[in-house]
Length: 161
Image (cartoon, rainbow, N blue to C red):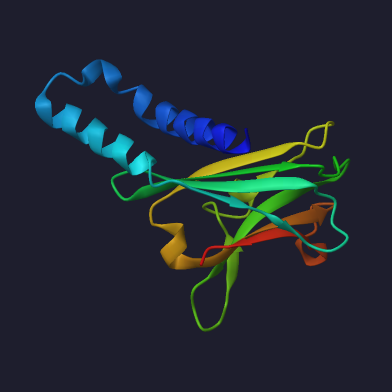
């Protein structure tokens, strides 16, 4: 059931990104491009988030899916998060460098933030312009109480190999 949900989520992300262009798929080059994108979708990765000891999360996963032109969609789903009254969650990644720099996965910290709903479920997605498995060692989910980054707490992480 979980793999079906993950697969459907990946197809949804890809469908949203390429679905708007379906009306223009008249010539063979565009049809071939769509076929290549769908073939790439089969190489999507679904990875389970590992909760940090004592963190408020019981289920979480990350889906990484190629969306064409060298871009990749990254979707994060987490359940059991504490719905913050003043604060947010942020998705960051540890770069594959000797310095192990941790950076927001989106364009900046604000673009990497999301809030959990009152049911404790949080969702985040973005599109990056490179394969995250070659540029990042891991993806991390952090809680930022009071929107104060100096008090950020690690919630969960997933290694990218």
